Image (tube, rainbow, N blue to C red; front, side):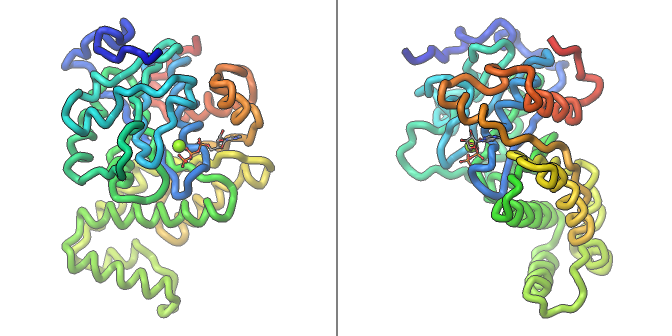
Length: 323
Ligand SMILES: Nc1ncnc2c1ncn2[C@@H]1O[C@H](COP(=O)(O)OP(=O)(O)OP(=O)(O)O)[C@@H](O)[C@H]1O
Ligand SMILES: [Mg+2]
């Protein structure tokens, strides 16, 4: 039977009105260059871990290519889904559905559109503050794959920008493309169109190896008027958090350090290597039986890796004892 998703069905915690003095939710957005690298698994596992640390969490499924957060957390799909928000029939808060797990709720992604779906710039700009106003300590967004414009808008607006890769070359390559797109998308906002256009054509020349020197954003931007250099510098101060999922060897586990140093060397961009997560057969086996891996096996090294990731990412003031 489908769950009733009326506001009356929210858990007591969610039902409490969020006082205006209460701080906004922390928005964590999980993105990847390549599909199938584990975004949904990582988003839901971070959410479980945060909820077990005592924080209220809402997962919002914004994967336009196929919502499946509900499957990852063992819920049936709800006909009340984010389509109703975009059509203006419901607020985002009204779409929050409690799960069987304490302090963990979610917003069902597009599940009954039957037509290609896309977000406009204006829709995303309206959505971002609503995400931060959801009644929860943390709001975790699971995106579809790739550096698409709405993904980059949401990623940039996040308090924590989590970029996921697997250790495979195809994923690593798309991770670099995502980072480049993220940088350019961010710089575009602080640039006049002519200056931005000439930066893109300089980048293309470097990519085609028609220029000898490796491209340095730092030295290029310092010499240019029309793009704010300070804005570029700020990209490293709220850094992209790189997570490497499905690691099967010590070399895989170390990969994040290499990607971080390449970003420093070739893009002048400081990123944070937040975590590596093991490949574990329990993950796909647990999806089959609709019980999340961290619920079925809460005391494994995998669960420990998510606990460490959360401790690394959350504000020390918000860190409470594990319950
Ligand atoms: N650490 C892991 N160990 C073993 N299997 C994993 C791991 N992470 C993810 N998987 C499996 O890999 C598959 C893809 O995972 P998931 O659906 O989370 O990826 P995704 O990035 O969200 O994909 P999409 O881009 O299609 O949304 C699933 O079958 C999942 O169970
Ligand atoms: Mg997914």
